[in-house]
Amino acid sequence: MTTTLACAAETTVHGRRVRTGLFIDGQWRDAEKTFAVLDPATGAEVAQVSDGSAADALAALDAADRVRSAWRHVAPRDRAALFTRAHRLLLSRADEFADVMTAESGKPLTESRAEFALSAEFFLWYTEQIAHLHGTYAPSSHGGYRVITTHQPVGPALLITPWNFPMLMIARKAGAALAAGCPVIVKSAKETPLTCALFVETLQEAGFPDGVVNLVHTTDSAAMSATLMTDDRLRKVSFTGSTGVGATLLQQAAPGIINASMELGGDGPFIVLDDADVELAAAQAVLCKFRNAGQACVAANRIIVHRAVAEAFTARFVELTEQLRVGNGFDAGVDVGPIISARQRDSVVELVEILNQAGAELLTGGSALPGDGYFFSPTVFRVKGRPEQLCSRELFAPVATIYEVGSTAEAVEFANDTRYGLAAYVFTKDLSRAVAVGERLDFGMVGINRGIMADPAAAFGGIKASGLGREGGHDAIYDYLEPKYLALTVDEEEGLS
Ligand code: NAD
Image (tube, rainbow, N blue to C red; front, side):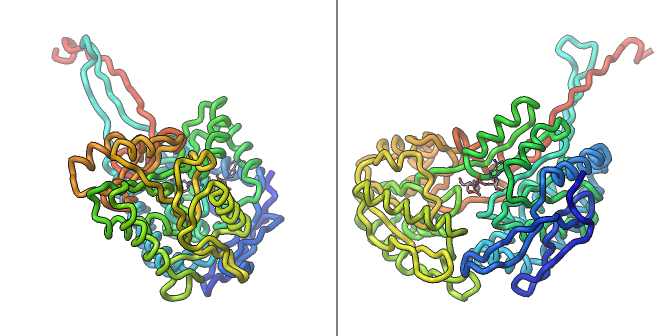
């Protein structure tokens, strides 16, 4: 039984019309309760959004399960045609997406536009993959029959997205899952449900069949996912978020052996070696650290600099950091927007306290900014030694920590001294050194002389406590497919008679 009412509210956000209901089985529905979405730049309410229940999630799973077979058997070209239409519609709504993203996440409009463009590219990437899924055909090892291998969609997929990249995360997951032939239930982050609503509405307008795409928002993610994860009809969970929640979902996935992909936390080392181009390294470090106010899983979490260039690098990095303009993401020229919430802002204040207690030296910034929004000044600390409090600690804040090392070997050893393994960066002018260091870094991705590397053509993801599976690249779609083997007896004599 669902608690929703089949009439769909909408609202206007920064002049853009946005649906505020849940989308289940091809219909927008309002839940009985709503929750507030806040603008982190002002603390003001942006919208009231339907607060879905576990029953709503089950209704979405009912729909997804009902259409799983039909969606799987849609011919690749027909599926690709829907994607192509959706991609065109997405592009035509670029400004709407950017405005809504900035309104609910606070990120500067330039970043929202860049995120939108990358998300559309991911969607296009999966569009292009739909008609290129391959299988194999081979004789069995002793002859007598044939080994035919194809791939089949795993089935209904639960996609749980975080707030820090509200568009990219859903485009990347839903693109792969739908391209593979899996119906999806998207569980948005409660801080940024409106971008997800725009995305799902665009797919609806493109003509995706009822039940194939479903969207639920909720303030009780734990109850909702626990309900879905214990239902055998759910066959896949793809999650982006913190390692703790990822571990809980993996435990929930275990009894039903639910296929799981996890994009989790990071502790990215940003290594600047003694022969690095210091100007380039400092500029890329600022980008890698302060993009999205530091709230990125691939952010430079520990800036590890060789002693020979530490002074020059640090001086330039601090100089560039002080040039960053903090403010409302809609204002022209703003580089750093607010922190997502008051709670998260308070955790940044605590982080600065921890750094002070650990004896780190504050070089710039260090405080929350007064006013209604949740702003924090871009902050740089020089850290002595390796304080235990900072070990394997994802900062997720506009707070940079610089560490000094005496050799390349020490840089690599320190970089790897973490439970995480998502993104690492190395700056050196010597390419063979870059490769040697890159190969020794225990991370899923290594940026060489660049601080930004997300791309549809690249396999994005981590190892160790940073996750399982990859998004993007040639193989990502296979995270939503299972190999299927057909054995075919061939009686050659009879066949030739
Ligand atoms: P979070 O884990 O608190 O929330 C992520 C999502 O999970 C949200 O939709 C949330 O509502 C939901 N959620 C929370 N508890 C849940 C539960 N018990 N069951 C099911 N769903 C639940 O993380 P966050 O604070 O929103 O995001 C920050 C974290 O995400 C950071 O650790 C960051 O590194 C990570 N992240 C990773 C990547 C990546 O690709 N590896 C990308 C972005 C963010």
